[in-house]
Length: 125
Image (cartoon, rainbow, N blue to C red):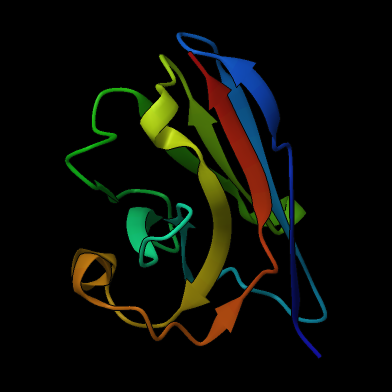
């Protein structure tokens, strides 16, 4: 059975950086679109970033554009989220997801085929 496992979360001061990783096991996701969502306390889960299966196309929520970078290594079945210039409002549980639908549509979806269990990112002011 396919499994997505996030890592790299933690506590960081505002202005700092973190890199999240999502390791996929159980099957190959090289043809899947991969991405990240997040859910802050008391809020709904929201789209953060998505990347096409080739890595050639990336999409970001406006709130993270210019600060976050999504990438993937299909040989390692891993997707990354480099987060720079972190703000307290970036505090959330970050979830990795995989789906076959185009990454350009992810911003309006919350029903991806596969989900990880999440990793907590806390940004202190």
